[in-house]
Length: 337
Ligand code: NAP
Image (cartoon, rainbow, N blue to C red; front, side, top):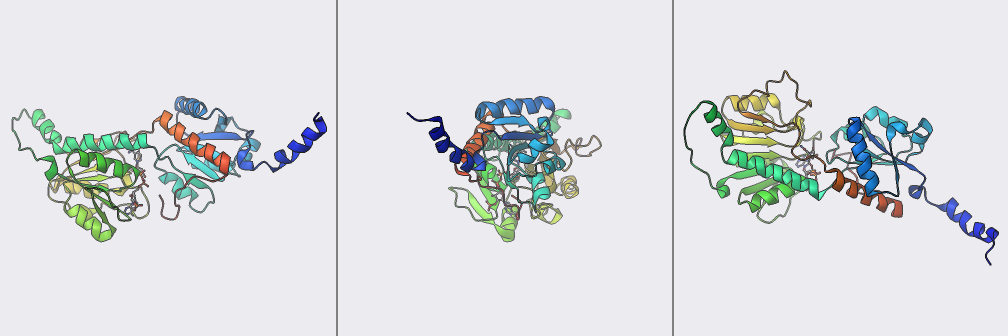
């Protein structure tokens, strides 16, 4: 018969040697500055996706408990609040865009893992299609005509003659490019590295950007905000677009120079802009963008994170980490995405 003593001999070393990434007693904080009701919804979705974890709201932890956490799940956390988590080795964001974390954690050893979710990519691709069709089928022009009780028909441009240039061919850019191409549009994309995609022309580098802009009737921005992309669509680059071209910005406000955009719309070099993102959100009540006749304002809704699918992906990544100790692929803090 196995004695208690023998059992202890077998278990004690295992307990002592158990790797710290696999400590099931460790709290897993959800750090966020979202309204309380949304935090509760996230907590429920995350707990359902990984019942084996002790997921708690960050503000329910004591100072000492915060100090012990190695890993956290975050949704746009207040950056100062991260300082209390002295032992953090990595963060899993439930957002795809982690720009604000990049600035503050640049020199820190904490790895930042962002959300990569096919459901999110599809949501963005649908938004890309919806607003490209809005521009393609002249809806802003007909809305203006209606306000002026003006009856005038304009020729329809076939989809294959409508050239859509996508800035950024990552998770969201490639899903959008594919859907737009399947709908018959002539699609091009620009990225840092060259891409080999079926029926989607790939451009890269400064020269590639110039070439793409010169032939885009609609520019769809799906780039991350980094030092290299801040102010990218400035006066000179907007001037490269064909007269009457339109812009959709679904990425981050600071990628487009707002004054240069307003000037290009006011002198009819550009016909319309669909803006979902702004340097300051919510957009200030005083902003001149609200009432501009050639701007469509959206309140950052092109691709919201889906709680259920995102929680499952976060759960899968964390489970993998608990098993192997390997942190999932993290954002490159040097280049900012
Ligand atoms: P991603 O997978 O990291 O893709 C980024 C793409 O941009 C890649 O193709 C990358 O090129 C390219 N890129 C980055 N820096 C560049 C540069 N300097 N020059 C040329 N190309 C550059 O990102 P994602 O998941 O597609 O997301 C893109 C952005 O969408 C996020 O960062 C976020 O800001 C925004 N977003 C918005 C919403 C919304 O609701 N409005 C929702 C989610 C995300 P390589 O392929 O060569 O690396």
